[in-house]
Length: 177
Image (tube, rainbow, N blue to C red; front, side):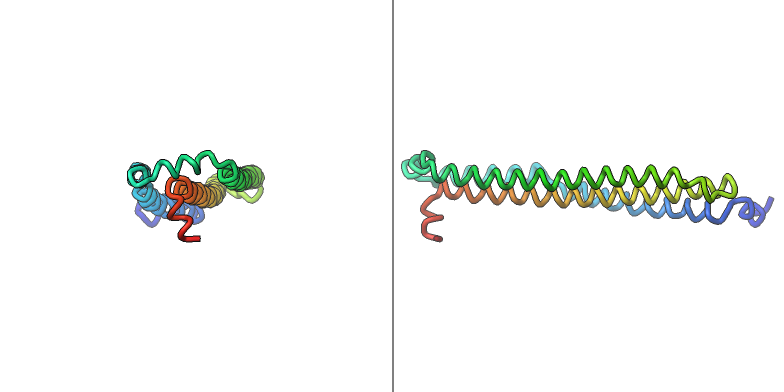
């Protein structure tokens, strides 16, 4: 058989679905590599440890010990931390709800795939396209959750730095106020 005759044996919608999956796979591979290179937990840990080490060396421990036993300062810090944790729980709960909604919608989409299938190839095409749409929605949900986690991490880091400076370097905070 010639190539022209072989192409006539494959439904055009199936060819298109396979091409969509190939494009998605190529794009996802590149995005995954970029993400892997962007995550630097050791670098972040070394940075935080270095900041703590430097602050510990420059701290007036007599003044700091008085600040550590100040109930109002500790209560304020714990109240702020509680607010951050409650907001974090709300954001994570929203993410889980989005995943649940995607799962429910996905089930409905997959159940409806067979309704318009005229041949086995068109059925396979419909499954591939629907599966790709579902995967893209899950990917969007994961991206939204990652953004939420980044926001949560930034809030915890800001809280930690603020309270670290307040407790270990009260003179720096007092002069700035």
